[in-house]
Length: 283
Image (cartoon, rainbow, N blue to C red; front, top):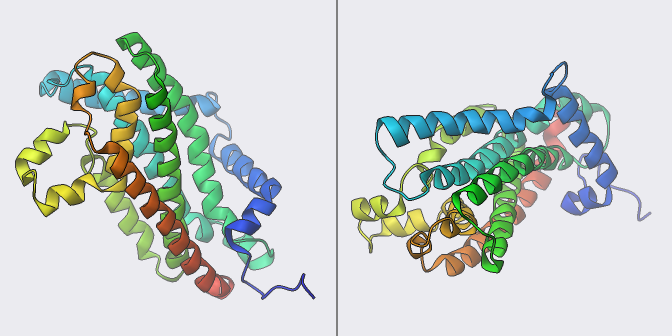
């Protein structure tokens, strides 16, 4: 009797962990579909961020002279890597259940597999981007340090938890209201400006005021924390003066952001579980 389950309701993320083989199959399927008939294949994971980096660096760094930041290329590319990984993970996770409607209707498996697989695919694409970032940072003079390594790991974990929690939540709601994916697209379009990717943090502090609630909200945005972490991991060690510009309260904000991200995962899992019983009929 213990093997019986309620139709349409899976075992949540624990069931996903028990079915890692299915998760691996879904990730491989998404990668094969994405790079079908592609000459470069996974090499596009290097090309796309490099082109994006070049556009922003030339436009902001050379044309508009937004290069008052030392080692601006490392600063910019580090932020872009984080935001691009989060955007890819969240955008694809939001559409994942609807995109796999045939499987949802015909096969019983943990539906959480679909948004989690989308986050994992984004993780696969993140790895080569981090390699490019670390190579660029090394050329700029960066050398790894223990705190920086911890910061980079915390950045990846935080970004993954945020994407997973929001992906579970939004993919479930998207089944009922397809407008959700369009709203997510709009938010992701402006997301690069919501964190210190293209500009230094002190500009926001000057605009909003150091003690204002707006600046506090900006600082405690988990994605801002993730960008600050990647800057601490790479850019801060490229030149002697960079480390002094890293926010001094980054460790505290990281703990808070991780707690928020874990809470989002729990919330997303709860909402997903409650709505998953209606997926088959809605699709």
